[in-house]
Image 1 (cartoon, one colour):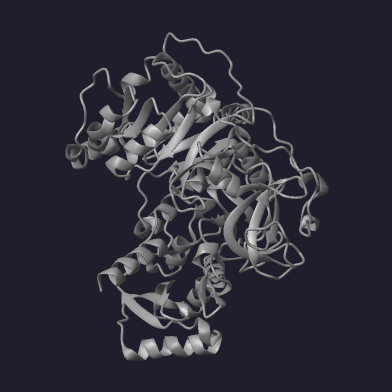
Image 2 (cartoon, helix red, strand yellow):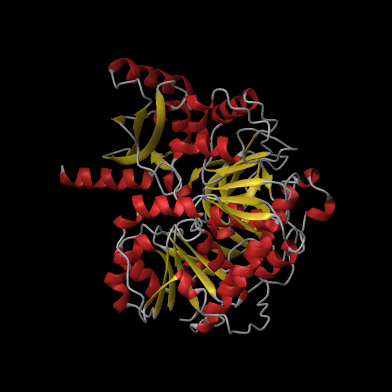
Length: 583
């Protein structure tokens, strides 16, 4: 099914305004934002004219102004047109963060095509299945993926693959070093009718003439990947308006952002948080984005010292690690405006630790946590600088409404009570690609006539509208009829000075149904012993109900992580299931 043949719910506006106890923190005009009827590229171009000579992208010593960026996007759009890309076609971008991938995203949007954003480390079969599912006709791929693509390309409808190298936009000296140290390790194709290198591709549109295409705010712009509520891979279809709404919200919620800002683009562009917050938001305010294709957490301090970013965007565990980095001891961070975390949440104790670190290093800002999901582009709530509430994920972003309901219903629970977090507003996705059943389970029209996104996350809201995130609904453990929250146990475990990471899962029990099992990774310098385990048990006994205390324990050197740095509890669940099956 073509994406143009699909029927989406789309955002139809708020029919009946839900309760908004947080409204006192916003000016009245910001409670419902106005989303222009234009595509992402038009919005970027319109704002970029105000700062054409500003640096838009810096990449390994090479700098690109907004004027140059718009020019490259135009040439790329013409080149796509030359090879046959038309309105509604799906083009897959399989790449790390590079200028070429960013340029391709906006160029496709300019001509009304849809960008399917894929992780370059996907397996051959995952790539093949993805390309076929979304009827991809052209690929823009980083060269390290060539061998995998070449092995499956004949089983797809792809007729052209554009090969990008990490060196393409590097400055001269860095490019030479890269060619000597890295490029010889990468197998690459020969230019032919199926493969073409970026530098040759970009010249194809020199004689093309583009007609103005403004597909409007409700037209599909990108497909992002998610597990959906069933855990199976789902294609999240996001509209132009979804992205633009998120940018407008960021400008209101983060009022100090301006065209003098420097933002580290370390979050991957194949993730909604990375593409929207680190790239699109930044470029639409005229900021400079430092594009980092391969981020290494152990080198975070070097990036901060070198670029002096005014805005840091990452996952919480990244900022946690920064507080223990000895190389940051004498670094002054007085230039920081915002430190924004998404993708996961931290408890109040850890937030206070990060805030203390920031203030001790001269920063005049606090750690900003948010709650979001790719089904709503990125953040839907933020712990605002001018309305801080540490330990929470703040209040809903302007124009977004959030309510807490009894799971799998539309019945709101009282303030302070746990339930499923539901979201309504202009950033909510169009739906899951070619999956009406899953879309209807996730997007539901409630009695108030509004479309609500059921997040599958448990949280609570207080009487002022501040939201506390607890955990995924499916992570909840039921033991002897009691609800046990792994995140609550993890918070207690991580109070111990020896604990680096923890993850709690439910494991089968003959009559209790499930019991909690704790996985622990200790910090350097600590080793598993009876003393540490007894101390952890004492912590749990003091802070948890008896039925919540883990009954099984496993210590490891490290815990598995997802692509954005979260502890991968799903992998631990699978490992445990296999282990028990083999016993």
